Amino acid sequence: MAEKPGSTVSMADIARLAGVSESTVSRALNNNPAINIDTRERIHQLAHKLNYRMNMGARNLRLRRTHTIAVVINTEIHTGQSFTDPFMMDMISTIADELNRAGYSLLFASTALNRKDWHTHLIASRRADGIIIIGAGKYDLPLKTLYASGDPLVVWGSVNEDVDYCVVGSDNVQGGRLATEYLLRRGCRRIAFLGDIRHPEISDRQQGYLNALQEAGLEPVAEKLLLKSFRFESAQDHMAALLTQAGGLTFDGLVTASDMVAMGSIKALQNLGYRVPEDVSVVGYDDIPMANVYTPALTTVRQDIERGARTLVKKVLAQVKEQKVRSTTLPVKLIQRES
Image (cartoon, rainbow, N blue to C red; front, top):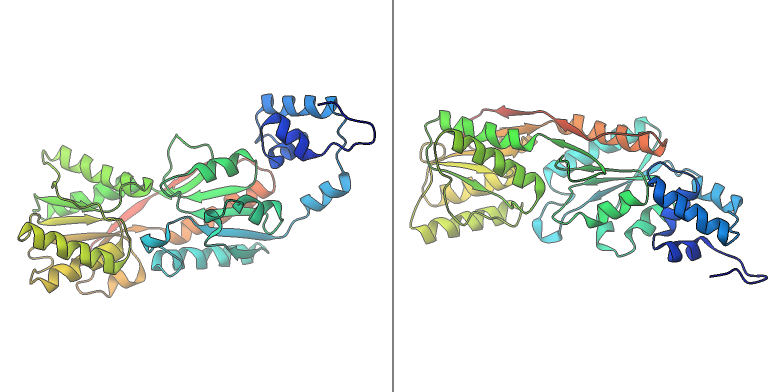
């Protein structure tokens, strides 16, 4: 493509020829280290060949800070883990407080990742300077796309070596292990796990559960315990159906993916005449405020939600200032109560 007399080469032209997004071109032309050196050099060469001149007025407008950070809950609607989930409410409220202390506002965008133009909607349109995403979800391609664009991004999720973007999360493998080891100490020998292991965080919790059973020389309970929702009602219905189909209890201990799942399971067990913890011991995950006042009071694995929220804010604001950040794994703790 040669520049025609009187024509104006746009950033979109370079992006199309380079096979990248406009935001990647912008970052490359500004020598942003988030864009790898080969891509930067290729884009600089294209810009030079096409006699592209950056519109400095437009650049300054793009770099104008909104002092707003978007917070996105990356879950599917049917899972029930939305803004009203107690865990989410605690996390988002602490994020809002931390942003306020830093002089930033919070833009809550619960459906942003369902939009095909979600990146433009939040960043390119300058509605926010960066994004905090709660939950990597089952499919993290949008997160990888956003990271590749060089925009400030931090995700609450499962920290692992397979992703390049910044992740803050609890030690979920250790959490699953702590829950299972507690049930083993109580004398449980047929321990089941309930949760949707298609989510990386839940999969890690299950891995901790499996590790603890293996070390104890025990096999996991082979039941249909793949729960596709975090809702109390869904867990209650699922557990009731499972017990009815099995003709009774097939396990004496239950490790669950969240406190809401644990509470729903306990309700189903109680409705069918089983006693918790006498007939089956149950361990939740998160330690939401309701856990201590539920009947029976819920034994659970505590995630440090406040520390997690503060860390998310710290890391996204560091990226806004073009500082490099690393993923962080936070410790968990078993809270022993009555279940």
